Length: 157
Ligand SMILES: [Zn+2]
Image 1 (cartoon, helix red, strand yellow):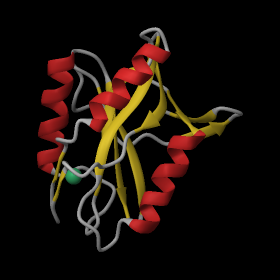
Image 2 (image 1 turned 45 degrees about the horizontal axis):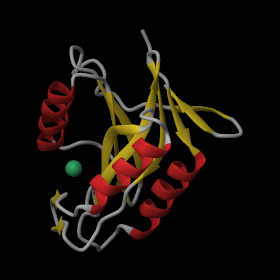
Image 3 (image 1 turned 90 degrees about the vertical axis):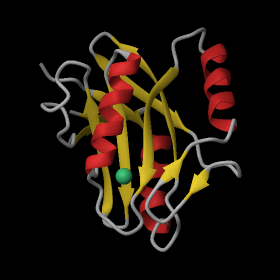
Image 4 (image 1 turned 30 degrees about the vertical axis):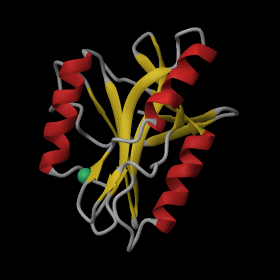
């Protein structure tokens, strides 16, 4: 059972941009906004760090209220279809793969939310997209691969 994620072009472009600018910066991060379509997902937008976020060399703490505000706006504007679908952060000094702490954090978040979520890691060498499902966390930790690109976005599976 494969899960496909349609990543809107704007999100791909933002992650591409972060690849180019994250080196030498403290970690950045935010939430991924999207919708669930049956078994599949769409990632439509992402938030960016605000002044109250805790950006360190090796960690990112999301505490600025702008993330929640952006979520609430998207939720209202979409009649409750676009919401919290995942998280992203940068690895300015590493690669686009999750650390053991990332995996632990993702798994507990997916368990708390109770549905599959997407996670992106952007590093100077590229960005990776991962999906974690509540009951198959280990089997879905694998990095998704980009496939067909259409008018709206690129399908990862
Ligand atoms: Zn990380």
